[in-house]
Image 1 (spheres, rainbow, N blue to C red):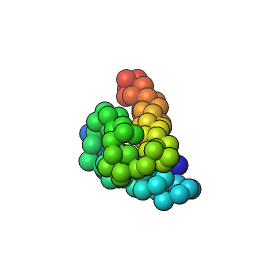
Image 2: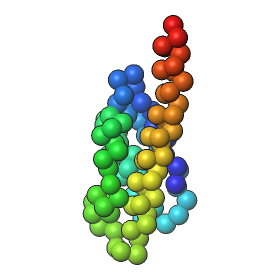
Image 3: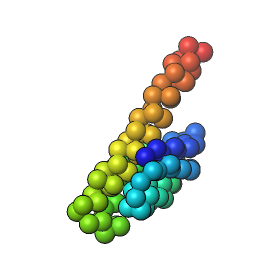
Length: 95
């Protein structure tokens, strides 16, 4: 499960896309994650939990790992975004 986000200059997520290989529950979890992160700030998106995704989709206990993958994908995308922003901040300070 991979999640890509596009963040504007104000730190708001304006677009999100996913690529998932797996069952329908995994695809649904990914899709819901993209819908929920759009319009949120990076910090707000970090508050999305797998339990919220599982509850919204009414996932059975045997499929809860799908919502966990979605939460992990959100966290990974946000961590990648923050990592890529650090060099830009350093360049701005040098100028």
